[in-house]
Image (tube, rainbow, N blue to C red):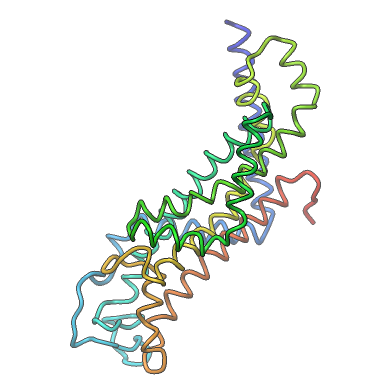
Length: 300
């Protein structure tokens, strides 16, 4: 019992030391630091959206319909202008960040958990289980992600959880293939053989010995896939298959402004810029984490 407690303390100490080392190198990595700061600002904005929105994002005033931004009118009522129903675009962008961030994190989290566990067990045990999952993942990879998600949403109908299901049904494949390959390589290492010789159970070896050594690849892929999932959500909402009005979603906001691009360009432009900034910051952080966590790369 004392030995287990001692080794647990050592593991926790090493974990926090590695976490601190990653944080220090992340701060030294300029582009990753910039991406992380922008992501934190988006997260804070989404968390306190109810307190910082200047107007009600759901209620419109037809007298304020297609109101230009404040630098054109000189009025501070609608800072970024009003949409086709007289709703404040800035308020709807702030509320829309909740949808994009929540769906992005939830879909990536479910995909990462399912793909990592399936990939770890398939790579460790191999056999028929591995063959079936590998062939099924190859079938899913044959379909373009957006077309596949459109087909799923067309069958199930729009809705929050239907959207999560459509994104995760195919989203786990990349995590499965990555972890399966990593586990196939790790099972030949000496520490796995030592764990087997010590009499540890297979699932303990997978969860306690192998996964901690490949989790850095999982974190990098998850960060990069987060931006992709947010784009997929915006694309489906743009096509009318995602989050439905009057709930603010950046994709549906861009779509609602299409008929007014010549005389009210701000309706589509500002939600598109918000989407661009969020995805760009996620990609900057993901690339930085890849440079930091991949031992084959060096930071300049």
